[in-house]
Amino acid sequence: MPLNVDVMVFDSGVGGLSVLEAIRSRLPDLSYCFVGDNAGLPYGDKSESWLVQRVPQVIDCALAEVQCKILVVACNTASTIVLPPLRAKFTFPVIGVVPAIKPAAQLSQKKIIGLLATPATVKRDYTDALIAEFAADCQVIKLGSSRLVTIAEEKMRGIPPDREELKLILAPFAAALPDVVVLGCTHFPLLRQEISEILTDTVWIDSGAAIAQRVAHFAIHPSDLSKSGDGAAFFTASDISLESLKPFGLTNLSFLKI
Ligand code: DGL
Image (cartoon, rainbow, N blue to C red; front, side):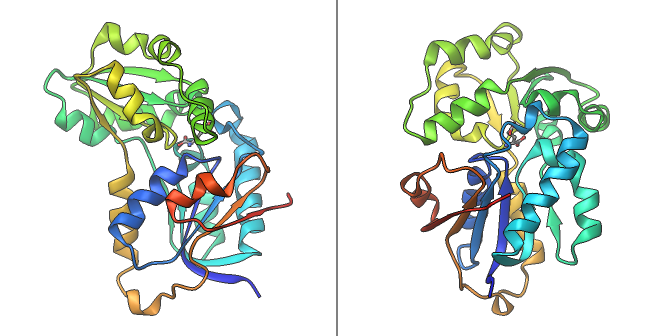
């Protein structure tokens, strides 16, 4: 018998934990499970056709173990591509995440904003459309990095980020000095402390609170939702420890055979 949880949060790796944290702090009474496709990481270097095939496959595999009432695709790189097929496939709500371009443009005084995301996200037509719609009055500095994804993954494994390497990666922002930078990859809030020490006058915006708000919109009848199965994590590769997941309220770790 599969477990039942209220919310399943999915990402390529540990990045989605930043989203899980935001949702849980807003809705602490719901039950959660986390699914990470770390065998497929990084998604930011993968083709669209690969993602369209892979993501539903991993989610199907997870749903054989645990059923959910709401699915959150806590990955910008996948969301812009796989939300339509997932929404067509499942009857429960599927919530995605897109870079927070609109609030960043509204907040920017200088009208120079940064987008820090994966190489795939910065190239997507979807991202260009968001910029055209919500940030037409801003200069947008786009910076795509898969290495930052790896650095966030390493941090979760106890390897501290190298400040000099972070400085090099962020150099385009140090030159253009955007006053607001969008963290357009869910891995990057996990590095917020380190990157804020490098660019001290920058406001970093992520989508965690907006997603939590969206989940709250669907989870309007908490009495219908059960807490059984709270805290289960499923990953596709074994290079992750339960210890690193415990601070995110995950107390069970299993591996999906895919
Ligand atoms: N965390 C994911 C995102 O928000 C992608 C990281 C990756 O696998 O490249 O885009």
